[in-house]
Image (cartoon, rainbow, N blue to C red; front, side, top):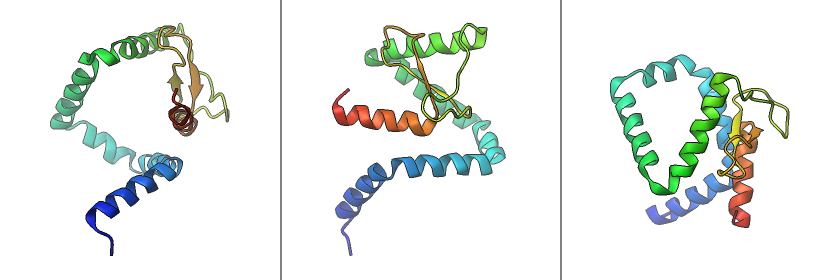
Amino acid sequence: MMTKEQKKIYMKKWRTDNKDRIIEWRIEYNKQNYDKNKEYKQREYVKIKNKEYSKKYKSNPDNTIKTIAHDTVNNAIKSGKLIKGPCYICGSTKRINCHHPDYNKPLDVIFLCPIHHSRLHKILKLIGG
């Protein structure tokens, strides 16, 4: 039997090794539970919690340039100046994320599906980028 600390280490390693599998599972779960998730997000305490997290993230000086880049892209998409393309790797058009190779060029983004976006960050973390 594992100790609490051993289990913690094991689970952390398992989550790291199976990140893509976990993301795929979450996507499938969210598809099957769309109404349940939508109802949850409408609860007042969840809205308050999300606003508090957003304020905390945006007020962190390390995230200022990231926040500006994200807001710039979101505004450009809403106004029609930037149109989301398919995933650069697999061509999927579902749940597309915008990846910023350089936050100083906010509209210079790569369109990726959640799985490939996650893999890219995993690779960048490994090589120290």
